[in-house]
Image 1 (cartoon, rainbow, N blue to C red):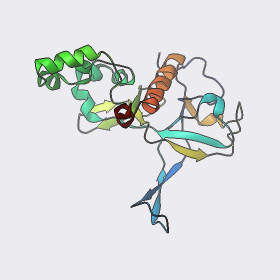
Image 2: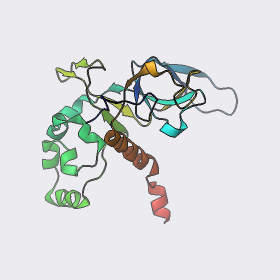
Image 3: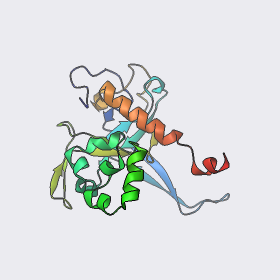
Length: 206
């Protein structure tokens, strides 16, 4: 079960889909210690995902990531086309590649990748399953009606909201969907892996 539909909590929780909020981020051409020319990019997505840990929600502040349309090319991979949420968990390299991509590898490359075992692929993304509470969309590239959305861990923004006080003091009417405990664990695990990876530079110095 991807979502908790029968007994969602009357509070905001990590991974919740919410609506009615707005985020903004700055955009500059180049860093400068003096005056900087910049613009503000206002993000008015229909839906956002709460990225603040459950126990830290409060103080009129939320971390949000906008729900975005999924990458059309993923449907070229039968493993993903079967269920795009496969991207959320660890997989083998053969599962991660379309069949033609796997066939292009040499036998030795296939062996090496098979021996590596399952790992996270498409590290920046987490897929949200379709639900009638979230409007789907038509994708012209694939000719599909799609209900899946994704968040990108590189696009997390702070939003201020005076009604977010913590605990049960949140604008609960903004809550659309809550993840199941299992799905929230998958989101947490992949997010932790994304931010806790050892940089290649550090591996070289070890």
